[in-house]
Length: 606
Picture 1: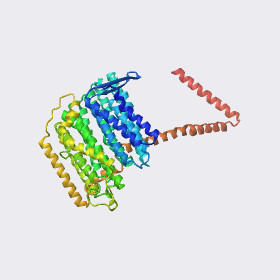
Picture 2: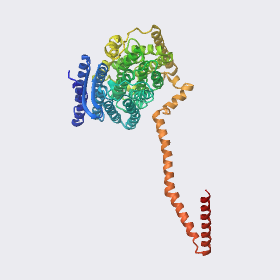
Picture 3: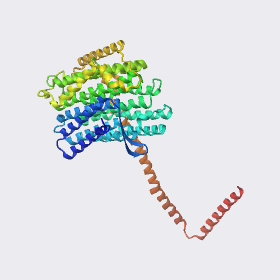
Picture 4: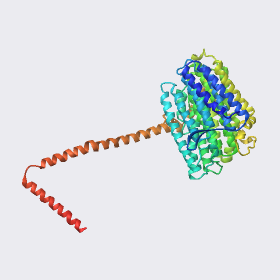
């Protein structure tokens, strides 16, 4: 196969996006044909299992248009194109009758093109070109969501833009240290500048993945943006891109080891992201917002696994990356089905949808069990790999990950109970199952979650093991760790049952945690956005702007008021002193002469 076929993964979606905007008809068909074509190409490239390189002259100064395909990038491309096709198929029904449908499909296709280009790019400047292009389409996809969506889009643009600035500076440092921008040729020493470059590149990667503290736009987008956006970007595509870049800089460019303090930094970020995000997810009473916090929390497991710098942890983190993209996108699709059929995702207005939407409910149960780490679904096996590596590095990281699993299971028990079981809201009596184009992607993804669990060894061996340069030895999960996982899941069920009995409903099952003496105050502050880095940054900027405004006004007052008024006052004083009295003038002259004489004598004395 000619290496030029790599260009088609960018050209096809871009041309399709332009056609959709120009024709304004048949947008669904064009989008399906484009994403289907991309998927076919990606499957063919992955099956060949060959390395391709495409190099074209571009900008000079060592900046070339270089695409490189190898096993890891081929796997990510396969995932991106598969999700793009399934999300477009789902959107054919979900977006019917919505506003800005053409813009939605156009932005989605351009996003796919930018993502494909970023994965294939083997030159850092080319990577930035596609990376920043994705930032623009993200803004557009959020902004078309509704009245408040523009504010959320702006928030996303600023947060991700700042992290991308860090990425740019990191790339500049790498160029300074290595003299090349070709990613596959870069090996950076972990000296002071090298560590600084790693941290800056890491910020760009984990921000794209949705990690804390670059996360706060995601829950807002869950409410404001079109739902397929959440299933495609924060749930799947951005995780794939962010973790892909993190894995490349960790494994290939900087070659982190277990003895590096950067490894501890990554694991710490991962553990904090797991716990803080899942704590926020637990108290949510909106279907989409609860899922959005889990989209943040789950990336913590990936960062933790890769940060261990152990083969089992790295493979576990990458396996969790694809597993999370699967079950999280499907969970958002179930939320979209519920929203489409009932008109709401408010858990207080749902309930008893199991009998009305059985296929959606089954897909939810499978993917909720997957994200909670219930065997034999895929999430169980990727989490156990991460647990194994975390325990080997230090028990504190294992405890954080295990506690995250307890809270994840507790929040999905609450969500499932509130939405699909319990007492049905009278407003939903006439609710029907979602349409076939919406069900097919959910069923396919849920089935893959089952298959990746039952055949996890084959999935790991086919997709992930070839990524590691060192040998990966497959081994069974520790009996002790599996037992502890089972205990935690059982405790989550008991917690939910007790919480439901105490508070009288599934939606309130975690209220005793929400309103606990110490946690209640913290939660109140968090819900008021007092811990939101973006809001904190706005307040700091506001204070600085007020200080600068005061200084500006002070300078204006000095030049426009004080100086002018002083000149007028001095002029009036001198004018008043000129009375025409010659005796007074003689006294002034003598006084002036004395002063001059004194100054001259002082000059001679020195």
